[in-house]
Length: 454
Image (cartoon, rainbow, N blue to C red):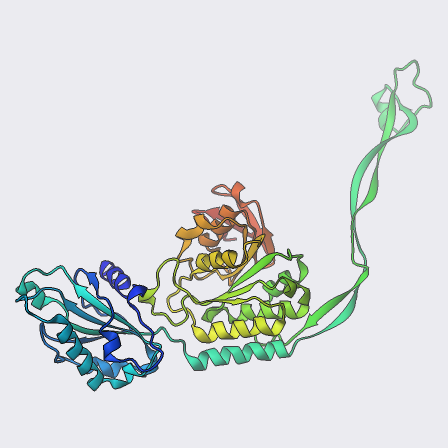
C-alpha cells in the first residue's frame, strides 16, 4: 500500500506537467500538455482521490458515481488524464482519443474547466506491452482534492487570537533590587593557644603563649558574604492580557525576558494545533516591538491546502514570509498562513521552512524555530543542509520531548526552550543523562527526553 501511495505521489507531483491558465481552460490548451511516462497507475482507496474510469480505447465513462463525493468544485487541487501507450495498430490516433476524453469530461463536469487554479496532468502508462495487460490498466481521469482547512474552525481560531491580542495593554512597574549573596567560610587566628593536654583543651583552657612552640594556635571560622549578583532596581514594562482562553504562557514569559539577536529569524509553525502559541508570539511583539526591527518572520503550514499525497520532502510549501518591521505586516502574514492551510497530516515541514528562511536572509546568525512537540519533523533528512544554529522553542510538552527537535538543536549547536527551561550543550548528553525541566526530572533515552516517574 505504501509503495502504491509513493508512486501516486511521484506521478502527481511532476510540476512540469501542470498548467495554470489565465482564462477558462480550453481543451486545445490541455492537448498541448506533454505526457509523462509512468509504469502502471494503481487504483487504491485514498482520502480525497476521485476515480472516473473509462474503458481501454474508449472515451465513454464507466462510472461517475464518485463525483458526488466532491464537496464543492473549489476543493479540487488537480486533474490527471491517464491512458496506456500500447496500440493495437500503428494508425491508432491517441491524441484524438484524448481530445474526446477531455470533451466528455467537460460535458459531464464543465465547472472543472472554469477554475483556473486547478492543475492538469497527462500520464502515459508504458509498462503494458500486450493488449490483455493494457485492458487491465486504469484509463480515464483522477481528481485529487485539496487538504482544505475547515473555514469555520480557522476563523474561530483567528477570532480568539484577535480577542486576546486586542486585550493586551502594558504599564511600567518598579522592579525592586534583589541581591544574591555569595557566602564563604574564612579561617582566622584567635590569638590564643590550645593546651597539649586534651582534657584541659576540652575544658576550654587557653593560653597566650605557645610554650616553646609546643602548643598549637587556635583558629575560628567565620562566614564572609560578598555580593554575587544584583538585579532589579529599575522600571520595567509589564504586559497584561486576557488569560481566560489559555492558561500556560511559558513561551510568552520566556520570549519577553530573554535577549535575542537582531539578526535572528523567527520561524513559526502555524498549523491548526498551534494557535495558542502563535498568539503568544504576537503578544511578544506587542511587548517588545524592538524585536520587529530585524524583520525576519516566517510562518509555515505544511503545504497550504496541498493534499498529503502530493507533499514531497523539500518541496511541500506553505511557507509565508513577513519581510517587514511593522507589527501589522507580521500579523497579516500569520492570518494568511492560517487561512491557507492547517497542516493536513501530522508531521510538519520544519526543515524546509528553516532552509527557505536562511536562503531568503543569508546573513541570519541564528534561527528560532517555534514548533509543536506533538508533530514529528517530516523532512528531518534535510537537517544536514542547515548550516546555521537553530534554537527550538517547543510547545505542548508534557511527558516527553520529541527527539526530532533535540536532534535539530544538537546538530546545529542551538538551544532548546521547553516550558520555562533553557537547555544547552546537548551534544554532551549521554544515555541516562538527567535534566530538570520546570523542577521535574527528565531522562535522556533513545534520543528523547522522558519524564521520570516519581
